[in-house]
Image 1 (spheres, one colour):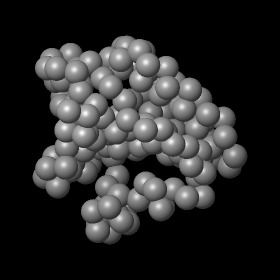
Image 2: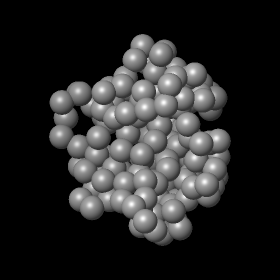
Image 3: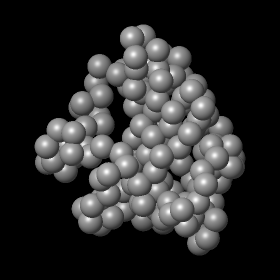
Image 4: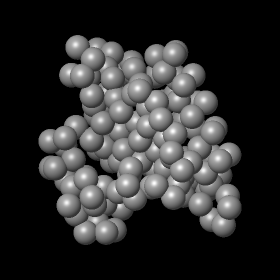
Length: 147
């Protein structure tokens, strides 16, 4: 599954407050990683487009089989995507940054520990003026769908 959507639809497609009935602003990275996210096998992530620095909640570390104190390098993390999924993710990411659009992708990943799995990646740009400065979103284990 892949889908690109305009930023104007962000609240319809990406608002965790709507998803979890939480108050606005309650899910800011990196402070929020409740039992509810863990139960849904969801982690939150963010990428600073200035330097590609990644910020993850515990659920994303778990999804990729990495210790929670691991140093995150974007190129190394992208290498953990199975090739067709990595290529699709990179295309959608570039499109999201250029056109200030969000996207959804079901991607196969190869965690550092454990078997291959599928995750749903939901991303939305954070813009300053007309320029995307960060991407942020959700990564959810959806392996059960693909069994």
